[in-house]
Length: 346
Image (cartoon, rainbow, N blue to C red; front, top):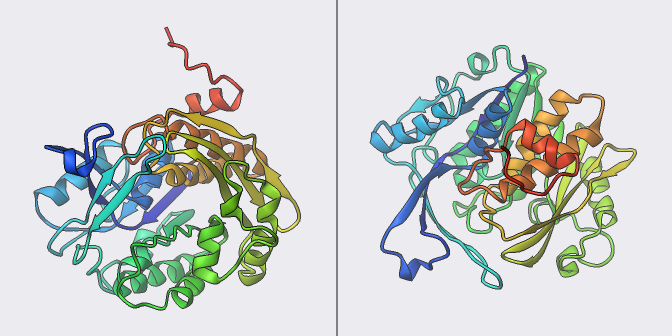
């Protein structure tokens, strides 16, 4: 069986009930999640053996985060303990023409103060086939960027497939690190690169040819990303596949959703889904990445199947409250097959 390792920060998510604004809240719902932990939960849910590596504070809240991973079937024995606190983010869920808001409270978290040498990557990667990280981890602090670099170097030396979700976050990268230099070095070790046009531009200055994609509204065309994928492969010659999600935002409650994959020769495209009455779009990209890794491991000779699985999986995530995708392989395959009826299974 394939074994996967993901590395990053898991946080405490606090959100007002339903669609309440922060100023209306008298209580907050509690969820634990983060980009790389969400991918790990997806993979474990699909039956893939997956370990999540992070640093947690040795207190009740850190234990709760660890237990959340454990109950979802994710391996937690590679977690290191130390530091003062778990990072927090506050989520205000938008609706219709009011977008969602995120406020971070993660300064001096255990993960942000991780140091080189704290993780024995050779031990972590024993028997592992795939390693995944995201652009959020090096954005937290210079030391977390340094440890991420340790990880990709070790994974590369051991012949492990390395993937990344570039995940540019405008509210991070506050510590003064050279974002382009850091992300360029880290991404140069990657075989599989996921990112949208904003990620490519903000991290590497790569822009699509022709009209800006952001102005396209919900009418997002796959061919607009071909030049981005080609430029990415030229910059990162190790990469075997460059993938992007195509999200068209009609409103906060109604998005279109599709994906494309470029392998250096041809571009594959999925069908476009209409996602209406969105329950929770946070973690949508993570659910796509989890579905993509599962698809590439399960259908190694069929990139179209892998891509179709990823998009269908992330489409279903938009119907699930919380950070992580809890859809099953059977549910994803059913949607891939064209059954989007949502009828009761009796």
